[in-house]
Image (cartoon, rainbow, N blue to C red):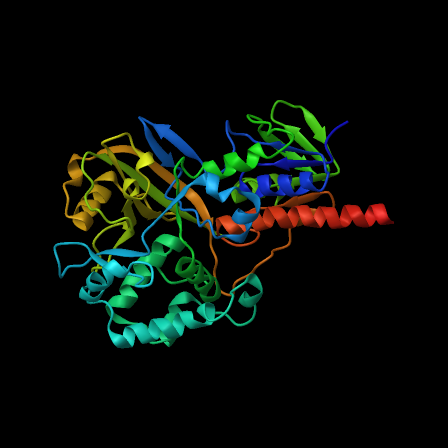
Length: 418
């Protein structure tokens, strides 16, 4: 007798769905094409370095992370609460830090020259709707415009605006301000009150831990070639049946399998550099705050300043992320090395490129107006799940998986009651 539910894809959405269903007594089988769980949230060990699939961070305060994972066991090392800045006015990196959590950096924050009172007031006006009260998905409905339009309307201009734009370019993987204001404010709240960091075992520690909770192990190396309501065909011709099929793959694959209408994807290129000496002691994300065009890198950081476990003893690991846009040539290694050297004021030309990750579909776009809780059902007995169904974050992926499980349980229990 087969499982009641088949889940295609062992990313965060699929694993969360499987856990929620198993906890309700449902027999589940998760199918994963790759050799390990995680989907986009994967970590590889290369020459002793922990390399995530693109630069990723984990906010342990996400409600679904706290609900489904053992956060203490993940041992998340937090980033510093602020931003490092490359400013043309100074040779050393400047800092804008949260004075509540980084009081030792107040003087450096004031010396940055970015906190003109009018700009700070404008930023407060822009963020206040999300900071004064809990900002849940329900708050994101109604009128909405782009991040650029709302920041312009708030009067946020000058050097501080340039810093905010540079930071959000790395978060949303866009540099044109096209992201929904509602979604941008929600994420601003999460950064303000959360403590994003790196699990000491790499980002894949989260899906690995989730998979370990399942009674029925994930079936790895199982590529699905076709799905239909209640039916899955494996690439080798094997056919499996169930009452429900959940396609929780990456969005482009879900579209190929189900015909689902997916949002535009945002791409990223991440370079991983090994070096003997850290170019800074800052444990923060660093952006280029100089005005004008200087290079492709949208953010960079010394990973080992946050989690030394990401490199062998005596070595350091630096990441540098750039946008990967459809129809535009990927950035060259030479341009990235040049720009990283400018940002840190360090001889990046001598660093080793351990790996380059080109990820064309890293995040779903979140344009205005923001749309949450997209319809998951393709047909009775066939649904989809993933961050693109809910919202672009780890929390969004896990929420979508939980929604898929709850929808099935509601229907199943209703059928049983009838």
